[in-house]
Length: 213
Image (cartoon, rainbow, N blue to C red; front, side):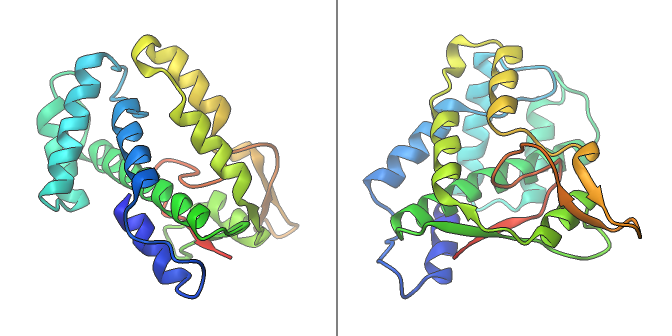
């Protein structure tokens, strides 16, 4: 969250003062910790959510890298989800990106921005999904993203099953599916059709971020 806010301050130094941490930021951060919008394998019970929250808090306090967080998650939860290191690295990256993006969106809101754009890393690892988004080069209304974020924060995870929570989250912020990618005559990805989450991550191990306009 703090890193996301700092990103916004660097992007928009001449806009309305964003500040590094305020009451609204603390409220959002606390809500994220309570919500726990992430699950491990097929587990979403209260004990998993609490242990996951504790692990994230420790990682933040001690300045873990994503690799260290991945190793810690694997040690903590491998007994309930025996997955490869690739899975735990992906979970760590997904978690870090989603929360940092929430921080950026919060910063854009404080800066009174109306739109933001996507920043896509284009290299040999870039997915066709993100190449298609980069080709579109759209401006995204901040109000739509804030509405989605607020609705995600309103999810009552404590009284919902994993299936119900998944359905709610996927309905609000669905990842982009391969069949939504549009290609030109040379099979280059040029766009995305249908509805999808308005902010990253757009798929597993997504590296795309946002920038204020």
